[in-house]
Image (cartoon, helix red, strand yellow):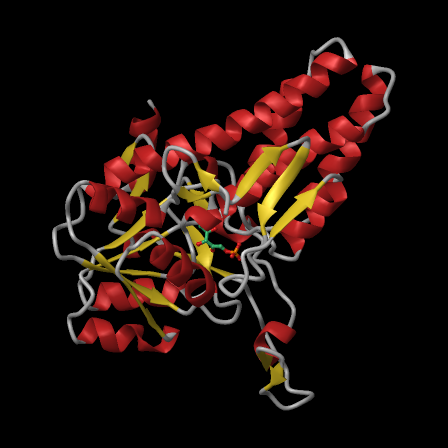
Length: 349
Ligand code: MRU
């Protein structure tokens, strides 16, 4: 099992032997299988089919996909190389619409080749930048963890939704990174993970990776959140994000909004952990495309159909939590408190 060396954690995405190596998350928790991509189109398929998922992991994987496209290219001139990279950029960009890290990562790599004179230098620049982004992701998660750990107390029972852990990043995680850092700081925290219907990232991935790392974790159905809060079991909530707007609106896995409303009702602090690569400084709430996924995810439980044929289905994969429901947004540069727009400006100087 590949592990991030210094952290002894799962390594979700890696550049190895001139290929992009991914943990196949569709097979977890039953099988630990690695997928080796040697063509950028395989990388695009892996993102689309959720072999790799989670905003920061998608971003870094797409960047490494561009590195593969550069490597595959037979271009003799910079112009030909840019045409090949642009084709790959468009294919990778069209994989999933909501997590902003995907667009941020692809644009950052493309920017790096602008002005480079030779094909050889450009190919190297693309790969170097993508690998740098993978390293920076772990570093940002570590810093977020240190910033967030101060907000959690010994004995806290923390609810998380979806998977914002090692498996959603290169390693360590955003929301689960904060939980790891809290435990590393000597505080005992236990986690309640929601199943996260319909793709079950909570049951399949969060429960798996926390158990793998020896973190105390219990699993509940999504529908039990209100009950657990009303009973006073949950002391804090922490989730990740697919996109954070400058206004503090947070787009995350479908169901996050419900959890935030319940937390507000029961006066449970609701935190979001997101690196700056997940911030979208330009869009307004209505500009963000919410991915609609296959109805199969809803009508079936496992392979068995549970809904009648012909029924109308909606399957939005993300929702938006408004800033007034959020206690704080934990970033690698510090913890943002409301009013987010003003405090974000101050945080970024
Ligand atoms: O559809 P997914 O599994 O890619 O959705 C993932 C999430 O919503 C995560 O909470 C989010 O990407 C944060 S990951 C650090």
